[in-house]
Image (spheres, rainbow over the protein chains, first blue to last red):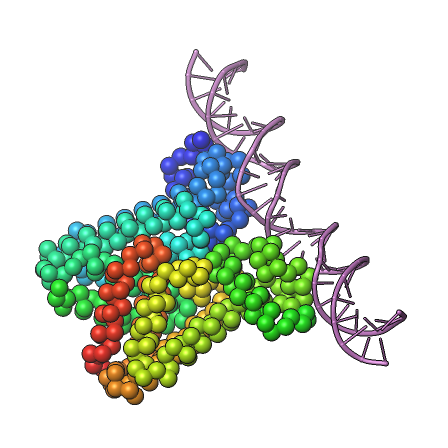
Length: 197
Length: 197
DNA sequence: TACAGTTTTGAACGAGTGTTCAATTATAGG
DNA sequence: CCTATAATTGAACACTCGTTCAAAACTGTA
């Protein structure tokens, strides 16, 4: 296996992520990949094994980055719920120039592939479970901080969050209508605050 | 242009729909298409023009079928809201054996393709607008029937419906968790019923 | 039955696919 | 500086892709 230094590896994964995220797994050819990450086929195959193996590595890299963002920008903040809401607003609505697609990469991959790509789908599903678990952690901490009612069903709320984020991002790609999404996002946090289970 | 009889044309579009829906636009090769609809390349190109033109024709066929289903199963029913809710439950949750993918084909296509496939994306966006308009019509009729409050913002509710359906179907493909979806679906109809704007 | 017009066929085209591997270049230890 | 090991290169492989088109088969009219 090619001994790419850690710094280069991160850079390569970042570039591969951007391309895969924009064009999807099937829509990205290995030649595009080659020129994008500036590696020749032999090196890529020595380092990552195959197109699908590289893609899975990239997916992990993507999820890792998301997880770290929540870790640094939400956990440890004075008002966890407030910080989470801010981050969510940014992730869903901000027209971040360096985001290659309006879709979440996990959801885009889940949508794109059928069950003939089991390995990739399995990894996507597992990563989505991780994300949901992190959401639940955030909500739990908000409960402890008293910004969410103590009887809130945290797991159900985390699932609702997932469903809505998926819907919002996709709807945004369809229509570009940010206003309704902004409204729904606010609404969702109101609902969580008044939930009685 | 090849003069396919109307019956054959419907059958061809149906088969092409099933394949495209299952494997996506990029994931479907013209050879698979050829054997699936039992036409030779020359005939396909005479009748439809290109792979992408056939795909767009198939998308229209797909949306047309959905529209007709709402027309016959919802409009004209004694309780439109009730009928709509039943149909929605079926469309989102039923493990219909002859549905080639858990995803909505429009959403799957929207997710899969980037802006380099403008023609297809434009058509998908337009069809999604149509669907939303039909939802609004249904809700309006429910208002007239008195099953929804007269001050309900029908357009906003239709958007919310869209966002949720997209989220539900995708979440279902990710986790298979029907329980939470069923709960959220019920919840959504409760919210519409008590809305105050 | 003969013929003009239409439709269908399937071989073929050129470009693009993921992947491999012998040859070359770079690296590090003595 | 020399050598053994590791990493990189890029040409090449065996397919597959979307698409075309001359030839064959079919169609309906006279």
